[in-house]
Length: 290
Ligand code: C2E
Ligand code: MG
Ligand code: MG
Ligand code: MG
Image (cartoon, rainbow, N blue to C red; front, side, top):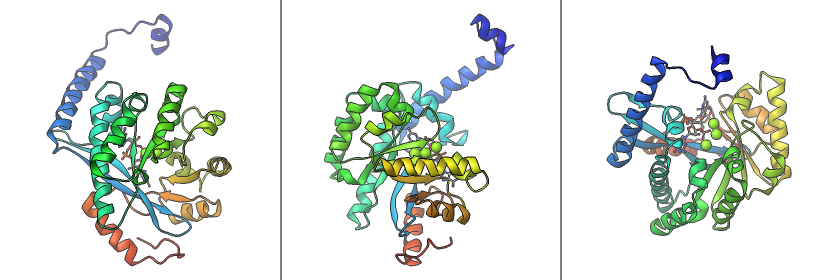
């Protein structure tokens, strides 16, 4: 009956669908209150590891929502929903604020860790976004080099001219820029060449499959070659085992991120993990077992 709906363009009344809409509206309201409340939303940080030196090169900030009655909500449940409304703006501001404050704490403590924040299309195309980010850096005193923003190609392709202007402003101000989830969505090599980005993150779906599937291994290798030819550093996300680490190192991948090294961690757990990791780690050695 899907085909019929598509053919006529008419959505028939569906009680289940109606419930979903009510559910969605309720969740959006809850999320709006959560942004103001300050005790439900938090960030976890996942380290990125240099495959050449074993050093921690940065951390990605990932949002967590502890809903008062529904419990822990995965970002995939509420980020796309927030992105379809203007709620993504205050949510992103809140995330940036938390991430930049944490990066400043690490820097002040003498262990500077560049922090990466995921930025949605709507924010990237918001003309005031760069000023907001630079205002935040100025207010907190965090050097721009300790902030990185992750965008997707589809975000940049949504309105190429506007996205390019925004990315140039951020990049010229010293903020690191990564293309996230590379290989999913529509890639345009012509366009990638013109983006002022310095890092490419290969989507975990390819990385997770690369040791079992020749096709995925070829895709990973091609992405690494492409990135290096464009002068970009390459991150593999979703690295879960030693076989994948070895394969990535063989292919010359620069950085790995994944459960093999650490899951996304609360700041307390991240500090514990870091102390432990550094204690067991010597430069030049392979990343140690954890
Ligand atoms: P992403 O930016 O591609 O983040 C990587 C996702 O992979 C995270 O899922 C992370 O927990 C997961 N991951 C990392 N290593 C491994 C691994 O070894 N194995 C597996 N199976 N998964 C791994 P998470 O935290 O559920 O976030 C999902 C997506 O939600 C993110 O994908 C990002 O697109 C979005 N997101 C998360 N936080 C934010 C945020 O603050 N703002 C925005 N706009 N989006 C966010
Ligand atoms: Mg990301
Ligand atoms: Mg990603
Ligand atoms: Mg992803």
